[in-house]
Length: 382
Image (cartoon, rainbow, N blue to C red; front, side, top):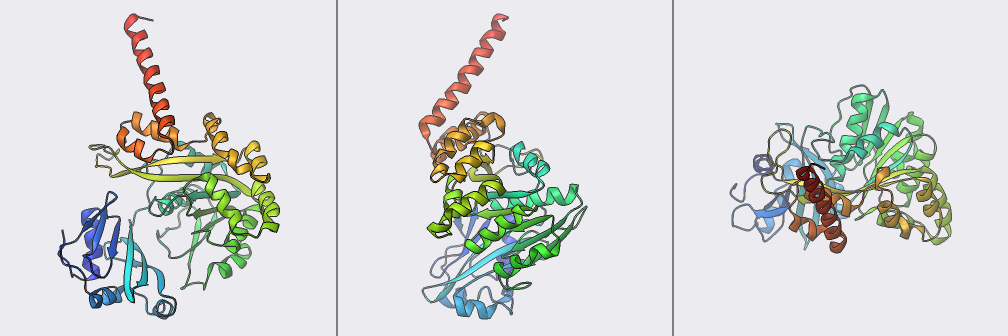
Protein backbone atom coordinates (compact mmCIF):
# COMPACT_ATOMS: atom_id res chain seq x y z
CA UNK A 1 0.00 0.00 0.00
CA UNK A 2 1.02 3.63 -0.56
CA UNK A 3 2.39 5.22 2.64
CA UNK A 4 0.21 7.83 4.33
CA UNK A 5 0.64 11.60 3.99
CA UNK A 6 1.26 11.68 0.23
CA UNK A 7 -0.07 14.14 -2.32
CA UNK A 8 -3.63 13.84 -3.57
CA UNK A 9 -2.30 13.20 -7.09
CA UNK A 10 -0.38 10.10 -6.00
CA UNK A 11 -3.30 8.88 -3.91
CA UNK A 12 -5.61 9.13 -6.95
CA UNK A 13 -3.14 7.30 -9.19
CA UNK A 14 -2.86 4.63 -6.50
CA UNK A 15 -6.58 3.96 -6.76
CA UNK A 16 -6.09 2.62 -10.28
CA UNK A 17 -3.03 0.62 -9.26
CA UNK A 18 -4.81 -1.15 -6.42
CA UNK A 19 -8.24 -1.39 -8.06
CA UNK A 20 -9.90 0.86 -5.47
CA UNK A 21 -13.37 2.21 -6.11
CA UNK A 22 -13.21 4.93 -3.46
CA UNK A 23 -10.80 6.99 -1.38
CA UNK A 24 -11.85 8.36 2.02
CA UNK A 25 -10.07 11.27 3.68
CA UNK A 26 -10.92 12.10 7.30
CA UNK A 27 -9.17 13.85 10.15
CA UNK A 28 -7.73 11.54 12.78
CA UNK A 29 -7.53 8.36 10.68
CA UNK A 30 -5.31 7.15 7.86
CA UNK A 31 -6.66 7.68 4.33
CA UNK A 32 -8.49 4.55 3.20
CA UNK A 33 -9.20 2.84 -0.12
CA UNK A 34 -12.35 0.81 -0.69
CA UNK A 35 -11.31 -2.34 -2.56
CA UNK A 36 -13.98 -4.90 -3.52
CA UNK A 37 -16.31 -3.28 -1.01
CA UNK A 38 -13.85 -3.37 1.93
CA UNK A 39 -12.18 -0.28 3.43
CA UNK A 40 -8.40 -0.68 3.70
CA UNK A 41 -6.26 2.02 5.41
CA UNK A 42 -3.27 3.41 3.53
CA UNK A 43 -0.46 3.10 6.02
CA UNK A 44 -0.99 3.43 9.74
CA UNK A 45 -0.53 7.09 10.61
CA UNK A 46 -3.67 9.23 10.92
CA UNK A 47 -4.08 12.50 9.05
CA UNK A 48 -3.72 15.68 11.05
CA UNK A 49 -6.33 18.42 10.77
CA UNK A 50 -3.96 20.59 8.74
CA UNK A 51 -3.14 17.75 6.33
CA UNK A 52 -6.80 16.92 5.76
CA UNK A 53 -7.77 20.58 5.33
CA UNK A 54 -5.23 21.14 2.55
CA UNK A 55 -4.81 17.72 0.89
CA UNK A 56 -7.37 18.49 -1.82
CA UNK A 57 -6.24 22.06 -2.52
CA UNK A 58 -4.44 21.17 -5.80
CA UNK A 59 -7.56 19.68 -7.40
CA UNK A 60 -10.36 21.97 -6.15
CA UNK A 61 -11.51 24.28 -9.00
CA UNK A 62 -10.86 27.87 -7.97
CA UNK A 63 -14.31 28.92 -9.19
CA UNK A 64 -15.98 26.46 -6.82
CA UNK A 65 -13.96 27.16 -3.68
CA UNK A 66 -16.31 30.00 -2.52
CA UNK A 67 -19.25 27.58 -2.65
CA UNK A 68 -17.47 25.18 -0.30
CA UNK A 69 -16.63 28.00 2.10
CA UNK A 70 -20.25 29.12 2.09
CA UNK A 71 -22.11 25.80 2.18
CA UNK A 72 -19.62 23.37 3.72
CA UNK A 73 -20.02 20.90 0.87
CA UNK A 74 -18.89 20.57 -2.74
CA UNK A 75 -19.07 18.09 -5.63
CA UNK A 76 -16.66 18.27 -8.55
CA UNK A 77 -14.70 16.08 -10.96
CA UNK A 78 -10.95 15.55 -10.99
CA UNK A 79 -8.62 13.85 -13.47
CA UNK A 80 -5.25 12.09 -13.64
CA UNK A 81 -2.87 12.13 -16.64
CA UNK A 82 -3.73 8.51 -17.49
CA UNK A 83 -7.35 9.47 -18.20
CA UNK A 84 -9.04 8.28 -15.03
CA UNK A 85 -11.81 10.53 -13.70
CA UNK A 86 -12.87 11.00 -10.11
CA UNK A 87 -16.11 12.19 -8.56
CA UNK A 88 -15.11 14.18 -5.49
CA UNK A 89 -17.41 15.03 -2.62
CA UNK A 90 -15.68 17.19 -0.02
CA UNK A 91 -17.50 18.27 3.09
CA UNK A 92 -16.87 19.99 6.38
CA UNK A 93 -17.17 17.90 9.56
CA UNK A 94 -16.03 18.95 13.00
CA UNK A 95 -14.72 22.17 11.47
CA UNK A 96 -12.34 20.36 9.11
CA UNK A 97 -12.33 19.02 5.54
CA UNK A 98 -13.28 15.42 4.85
CA UNK A 99 -13.75 13.82 1.42
CA UNK A 100 -15.17 10.79 -0.35
CA UNK A 101 -13.69 10.27 -3.81
CA UNK A 102 -15.12 7.80 -6.32
CA UNK A 103 -12.94 6.53 -9.18
CA UNK A 104 -14.62 6.57 -12.58
CA UNK A 105 -12.74 4.63 -15.21
CA UNK A 106 -12.05 6.53 -18.42
CA UNK A 107 -13.52 3.76 -20.60
CA UNK A 108 -17.30 3.58 -20.53
CA UNK A 109 -18.28 -0.04 -19.80
CA UNK A 110 -20.73 -2.16 -21.77
CA UNK A 111 -23.78 -4.00 -20.46
CA UNK A 112 -21.82 -7.24 -20.75
CA UNK A 113 -18.78 -6.02 -18.82
CA UNK A 114 -21.08 -4.82 -16.03
CA UNK A 115 -22.81 -8.24 -15.95
CA UNK A 116 -26.21 -6.64 -16.43
CA UNK A 117 -29.15 -8.76 -17.64
CA UNK A 118 -30.32 -8.57 -21.26
CA UNK A 119 -33.43 -6.56 -20.36
CA UNK A 120 -31.25 -3.45 -19.84
CA UNK A 121 -30.18 -3.48 -23.48
CA UNK A 122 -33.73 -4.25 -24.60
CA UNK A 123 -35.14 -1.30 -22.67
CA UNK A 124 -32.67 1.12 -24.24
CA UNK A 125 -33.10 -0.21 -27.78
CA UNK A 126 -36.91 -0.43 -27.72
CA UNK A 127 -37.72 2.82 -25.89
CA UNK A 128 -37.69 6.16 -27.68
CA UNK A 129 -39.61 8.24 -25.14
CA UNK A 130 -40.52 8.09 -21.48
CA UNK A 131 -38.68 7.93 -18.16
CA UNK A 132 -36.18 5.21 -17.20
CA UNK A 133 -34.96 5.32 -13.60
CA UNK A 134 -31.86 3.57 -12.25
CA UNK A 135 -32.03 3.39 -8.46
CA UNK A 136 -30.02 2.01 -5.58
CA UNK A 137 -28.05 2.95 -2.50
CA UNK A 138 -24.83 4.95 -2.65
CA UNK A 139 -22.01 3.03 -4.34
CA UNK A 140 -24.19 0.49 -6.15
CA UNK A 141 -23.07 1.54 -9.64
CA UNK A 142 -26.03 3.65 -10.74
CA UNK A 143 -23.89 6.21 -12.58
CA UNK A 144 -21.94 3.50 -14.39
CA UNK A 145 -25.10 1.71 -15.49
CA UNK A 146 -26.61 4.95 -16.78
CA UNK A 147 -23.37 5.74 -18.63
CA UNK A 148 -23.56 2.33 -20.34
CA UNK A 149 -27.15 3.04 -21.39
CA UNK A 150 -26.35 6.47 -22.80
CA UNK A 151 -23.17 5.24 -24.52
CA UNK A 152 -25.11 2.42 -26.21
CA UNK A 153 -27.44 5.01 -27.76
CA UNK A 154 -24.48 7.24 -28.64
CA UNK A 155 -22.84 4.38 -30.53
CA UNK A 156 -25.91 3.03 -32.30
CA UNK A 157 -28.34 5.88 -33.03
CA UNK A 158 -28.22 9.42 -34.44
CA UNK A 159 -29.61 11.45 -31.55
CA UNK A 160 -29.13 14.74 -29.74
CA UNK A 161 -28.20 13.75 -26.18
CA UNK A 162 -28.00 16.34 -23.39
CA UNK A 163 -26.80 15.47 -19.91
CA UNK A 164 -27.10 17.50 -16.71
CA UNK A 165 -24.68 16.24 -14.07
CA UNK A 166 -23.24 17.25 -10.71
CA UNK A 167 -20.43 16.63 -11.46
CA UNK A 168 -19.82 15.17 -14.92
CA UNK A 169 -18.35 11.71 -14.40
CA UNK A 170 -17.94 9.83 -17.69
CA UNK A 171 -16.97 11.88 -20.73
CA UNK A 172 -18.92 10.83 -23.83
CA UNK A 173 -17.19 11.16 -27.18
CA UNK A 174 -19.82 11.82 -29.89
CA UNK A 175 -20.17 8.83 -32.21
CA UNK A 176 -23.42 8.50 -34.14
CA UNK A 177 -25.04 10.97 -31.73
CA UNK A 178 -24.35 14.55 -30.69
CA UNK A 179 -23.63 14.75 -26.96
CA UNK A 180 -23.63 17.91 -24.80
CA UNK A 181 -22.68 17.50 -21.14
CA UNK A 182 -23.62 20.35 -18.78
CA UNK A 183 -22.00 20.42 -15.36
CA UNK A 184 -23.69 22.09 -12.39
CA UNK A 185 -21.59 24.93 -11.03
CA UNK A 186 -19.52 25.28 -14.20
CA UNK A 187 -21.86 25.32 -17.22
CA UNK A 188 -25.10 26.10 -15.40
CA UNK A 189 -25.80 27.20 -11.80
CA UNK A 190 -28.27 24.45 -10.83
CA UNK A 191 -30.56 21.68 -12.07
CA UNK A 192 -33.61 23.94 -12.02
CA UNK A 193 -32.04 26.41 -14.44
CA UNK A 194 -30.73 23.69 -16.74
CA UNK A 195 -34.05 21.87 -16.92
CA UNK A 196 -36.09 25.05 -17.42
CA UNK A 197 -34.67 25.51 -20.93
CA UNK A 198 -33.70 22.00 -21.93
CA UNK A 199 -36.68 21.37 -24.22
CA UNK A 200 -35.62 24.42 -26.29
CA UNK A 201 -32.30 22.67 -27.00
CA UNK A 202 -34.06 20.06 -29.19
CA UNK A 203 -32.95 16.95 -27.28
CA UNK A 204 -33.93 13.41 -28.18
CA UNK A 205 -32.40 12.05 -24.96
CA UNK A 206 -32.05 13.80 -21.60
CA UNK A 207 -29.83 12.40 -18.85
CA UNK A 208 -30.39 13.91 -15.39
CA UNK A 209 -27.68 12.89 -12.95
CA UNK A 210 -30.01 12.67 -9.95
CA UNK A 211 -33.64 13.35 -9.11
CA UNK A 212 -33.20 15.15 -5.79
CA UNK A 213 -36.24 17.43 -5.34
CA UNK A 214 -39.73 18.11 -6.67
CA UNK A 215 -38.45 20.47 -9.38
CA UNK A 216 -36.09 17.92 -10.97
CA UNK A 217 -38.72 15.17 -10.68
CA UNK A 218 -41.40 17.32 -12.28
CA UNK A 219 -39.06 18.43 -15.07
CA UNK A 220 -38.09 14.82 -15.79
CA UNK A 221 -41.73 13.73 -15.98
CA UNK A 222 -42.68 16.68 -18.19
CA UNK A 223 -39.76 16.02 -20.56
CA UNK A 224 -40.77 12.37 -20.79
CA UNK A 225 -44.40 13.31 -21.42
CA UNK A 226 -43.41 15.58 -24.33
CA UNK A 227 -41.73 12.85 -26.36
CA UNK A 228 -38.20 12.69 -24.94
CA UNK A 229 -36.32 9.69 -23.58
CA UNK A 230 -35.21 10.62 -20.07
CA UNK A 231 -32.68 8.76 -17.92
CA UNK A 232 -32.21 9.59 -14.25
CA UNK A 233 -31.02 8.12 -10.96
CA UNK A 234 -32.44 8.12 -7.44
CA UNK A 235 -31.08 7.05 -4.06
CA UNK A 236 -33.64 4.40 -3.09
CA UNK A 237 -33.13 0.74 -2.24
CA UNK A 238 -35.68 -0.80 -4.61
CA UNK A 239 -38.36 -0.09 -7.20
CA UNK A 240 -41.25 0.30 -4.75
CA UNK A 241 -39.32 2.81 -2.63
CA UNK A 242 -38.51 4.87 -5.72
CA UNK A 243 -42.21 5.42 -6.42
CA UNK A 244 -42.86 6.34 -2.79
CA UNK A 245 -39.87 8.72 -2.76
CA UNK A 246 -41.15 10.57 -5.83
CA UNK A 247 -44.45 11.22 -4.05
CA UNK A 248 -42.61 12.47 -0.95
CA UNK A 249 -41.22 15.35 -2.99
CA UNK A 250 -44.73 16.76 -3.46
CA UNK A 251 -47.47 17.99 -1.10
CA UNK A 252 -50.38 15.65 -0.50
CA UNK A 253 -52.82 17.61 -2.65
CA UNK A 254 -50.57 17.10 -5.72
CA UNK A 255 -50.18 13.32 -5.35
CA UNK A 256 -53.08 12.44 -7.64
CA UNK A 257 -51.65 14.64 -10.40
CA UNK A 258 -48.14 13.18 -9.99
CA UNK A 259 -49.48 9.62 -9.95
CA UNK A 260 -51.37 10.25 -13.17
CA UNK A 261 -48.40 11.91 -14.89
CA UNK A 262 -45.97 9.20 -13.73
CA UNK A 263 -48.29 6.40 -14.87
CA UNK A 264 -48.15 7.84 -18.39
CA UNK A 265 -44.46 8.73 -18.60
CA UNK A 266 -42.66 5.95 -16.69
CA UNK A 267 -41.11 3.19 -18.82
CA UNK A 268 -39.03 1.25 -16.30
CA UNK A 269 -37.30 1.32 -12.94
CA UNK A 270 -34.03 -0.62 -12.64
CA UNK A 271 -32.76 -1.17 -9.09
CA UNK A 272 -29.41 -2.72 -8.32
CA UNK A 273 -27.08 -3.77 -5.50
CA UNK A 274 -23.42 -4.74 -5.81
CA UNK A 275 -22.36 -8.06 -4.28
CA UNK A 276 -18.85 -9.48 -3.78
CA UNK A 277 -18.21 -11.93 -6.62
CA UNK A 278 -17.39 -15.56 -5.86
CA UNK A 279 -13.71 -16.22 -5.28
CA UNK A 280 -12.02 -17.03 -8.57
CA UNK A 281 -14.87 -15.76 -10.76
CA UNK A 282 -13.50 -14.11 -13.91
CA UNK A 283 -15.08 -12.10 -16.69
CA UNK A 284 -14.98 -12.67 -20.44
CA UNK A 285 -11.57 -10.96 -20.54
CA UNK A 286 -10.15 -13.49 -18.08
CA UNK A 287 -9.68 -10.89 -15.35
CA UNK A 288 -10.79 -11.39 -11.76
CA UNK A 289 -14.21 -9.84 -11.06
CA UNK A 290 -14.59 -8.07 -7.73
CA UNK A 291 -18.32 -7.29 -7.62
CA UNK A 292 -21.44 -8.18 -9.62
CA UNK A 293 -24.93 -6.61 -9.57
CA UNK A 294 -28.12 -8.13 -8.27
CA UNK A 295 -30.97 -6.42 -10.10
CA UNK A 296 -34.67 -5.71 -9.81
CA UNK A 297 -36.52 -4.44 -12.89
CA UNK A 298 -40.01 -2.99 -13.00
CA UNK A 299 -41.48 -2.45 -16.46
CA UNK A 300 -44.46 -0.11 -16.85
CA UNK A 301 -47.00 -2.65 -18.09
CA UNK A 302 -50.72 -1.75 -18.12
CA UNK A 303 -51.26 -3.28 -14.66
CA UNK A 304 -48.24 -1.38 -13.29
CA UNK A 305 -49.55 1.90 -14.69
CA UNK A 306 -52.91 1.20 -13.10
CA UNK A 307 -51.33 0.58 -9.69
CA UNK A 308 -49.23 3.75 -9.94
CA UNK A 309 -52.41 5.79 -10.52
CA UNK A 310 -54.12 4.29 -7.45
CA UNK A 311 -53.45 5.62 -3.95
CA UNK A 312 -51.32 2.99 -2.20
CA UNK A 313 -51.15 0.90 -5.35
CA UNK A 314 -47.34 0.77 -5.26
CA UNK A 315 -47.66 -1.75 -2.41
CA UNK A 316 -48.63 -4.33 -5.06
CA UNK A 317 -45.46 -3.76 -7.10
CA UNK A 318 -43.37 -6.63 -5.58
CA UNK A 319 -46.17 -9.15 -6.27
CA UNK A 320 -46.56 -7.86 -9.83
CA UNK A 321 -42.82 -8.23 -10.46
CA UNK A 322 -42.79 -11.79 -9.12
CA UNK A 323 -45.71 -12.68 -11.36
CA UNK A 324 -44.20 -11.11 -14.47
CA UNK A 325 -40.66 -12.51 -14.60
CA UNK A 326 -41.35 -13.99 -18.04
CA UNK A 327 -42.13 -10.48 -19.34
CA UNK A 328 -38.65 -9.17 -18.62
CA UNK A 329 -39.26 -8.01 -15.06
CA UNK A 330 -36.82 -9.19 -12.40
CA UNK A 331 -36.97 -9.52 -8.64
CA UNK A 332 -33.94 -9.35 -6.36
CA UNK A 333 -34.69 -12.91 -5.21
CA UNK A 334 -34.73 -14.22 -8.78
CA UNK A 335 -31.56 -12.29 -9.59
CA UNK A 336 -29.72 -13.62 -6.53
CA UNK A 337 -30.71 -17.19 -7.37
CA UNK A 338 -29.46 -16.67 -10.91
CA UNK A 339 -26.11 -15.36 -9.65
CA UNK A 340 -25.67 -18.36 -7.34
CA UNK A 341 -26.57 -20.88 -10.02
CA UNK A 342 -24.11 -19.29 -12.43
CA UNK A 343 -21.40 -19.53 -9.74
CA UNK A 344 -20.98 -15.75 -9.84
CA UNK A 345 -21.84 -15.30 -6.15
CA UNK A 346 -21.48 -17.65 -3.19
CA UNK A 347 -24.77 -18.82 -1.67
CA UNK A 348 -23.69 -17.48 1.74
CA UNK A 349 -23.22 -13.99 0.27
CA UNK A 350 -26.53 -14.13 -1.60
CA UNK A 351 -28.32 -15.02 1.63
CA UNK A 352 -26.76 -11.98 3.36
CA UNK A 353 -28.19 -9.66 0.69
CA UNK A 354 -31.53 -11.43 0.19
CA UNK A 355 -34.64 -9.36 0.97
CA UNK A 356 -36.29 -12.66 2.00
CA UNK A 357 -33.95 -15.54 2.82
CA UNK A 358 -36.70 -18.15 2.88
CA UNK A 359 -37.88 -17.13 -0.58
CA UNK A 360 -34.33 -17.30 -1.93
CA UNK A 361 -33.72 -20.69 -0.33
CA UNK A 362 -36.95 -22.02 -1.86
CA UNK A 363 -36.06 -20.72 -5.30
CA UNK A 364 -32.58 -22.23 -5.13
CA UNK A 365 -34.00 -25.59 -4.05
CA UNK A 366 -36.55 -25.47 -6.82
CA UNK A 367 -33.85 -24.88 -9.42
CA UNK A 368 -31.71 -27.64 -7.92
CA UNK A 369 -34.60 -30.12 -7.90
CA UNK A 370 -35.30 -29.41 -11.57
CA UNK A 371 -31.63 -29.86 -12.43
CA UNK A 372 -31.39 -33.15 -10.53
CA UNK A 373 -34.56 -34.44 -12.18
CA UNK A 374 -33.15 -33.66 -15.62
CA UNK A 375 -29.88 -35.43 -14.80
CA UNK A 376 -31.84 -38.49 -13.69
CA UNK A 377 -33.78 -38.59 -16.96
CA UNK A 378 -30.59 -38.37 -19.00
CA UNK A 379 -28.97 -41.22 -17.06
CA UNK A 380 -32.05 -43.41 -17.46
CA UNK A 381 -32.31 -42.62 -21.15
CA UNK A 382 -35.62 -40.77 -20.71
